Image 1 (spheres, helix red, strand yellow):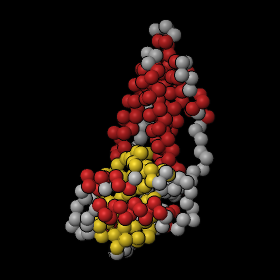
Image 2: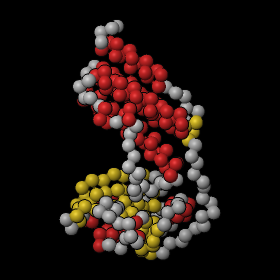
Image 3: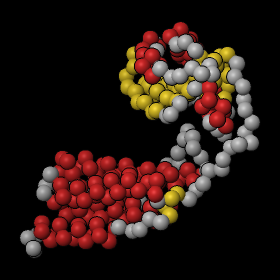
Image 4: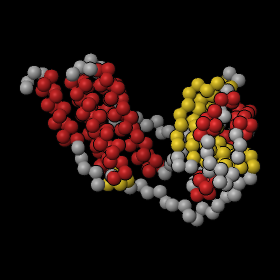
Length: 265
């Protein structure tokens, strides 16, 4: 265990009550694959019947060092606090999780992920009840997000057609991010991975490379959106069952917008 990891764990233990055990996950367990960007991934498990106090958990990290940035992910019986912390003139990435004992026995301990107990004692339940990950995604759970993305396509088209490139570019970058999310899901299914230490030097398809974006060319921007919509739509068709294609309608809207820009209406 390196100096920062030890410091972080001791600091959190001094600030929090009810911790039954702490486990260390990821590359910091052995140090074999640790590099400059390796994060410290720790999970703290509460004693049975003790509930999470989110405010106290978050504030417990302040004495570790100068927090430069952070994000929070909440579950029903767990919370993940990801931070970039300055400690002794270096920036350290800390993924700190807190969960109830029930969450540990029913979910966390059953994940296909190695860990090392670094504080306390914790029971390790059988993995016989683990589920099998499915690669086929049903449309229903994602319907709202998919609808929001297609609505954002129409808004981006409108903004660029009206030469509001500032808001249009903001929306376009969001749309690229949504496409990349599908790429990542597809990669996880293909590579059977859910931990991303190293990538595969992936790149965007030629039709939607970022170098194709011409900030002051309205027709070019709209054509870029058309190509992105086609690529996004195809990813959904390939990976989400019961999804119905929408790219033709978006293409028609873009064609109509370009005609208006040319004064052909």
